[in-house]
Length: 99
Image (tube, rainbow, N blue to C red):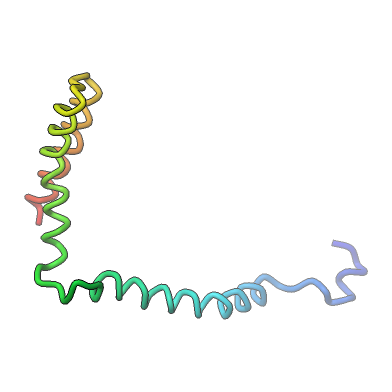
């Protein structure tokens, strides 16, 4: 850094830049949180009648059946398809047993 730049005072410290940026982003972050809450909890067709973890467990536990159906539909019985089924299926089953 040149000595002329030091004397002019034009260079800002990183602390000043981060505070300014955080003030500009705080409105966006606040609105993003409100949007996420609305989409997660209040999105129509009405109030939630099942806990969210039921949906997650249903999707993760149903993955092996979905993958097997895709293998049958596309007639793909390759080693890669079986590995994909085994990995995602075992993860889904372990995830549902854990909860």
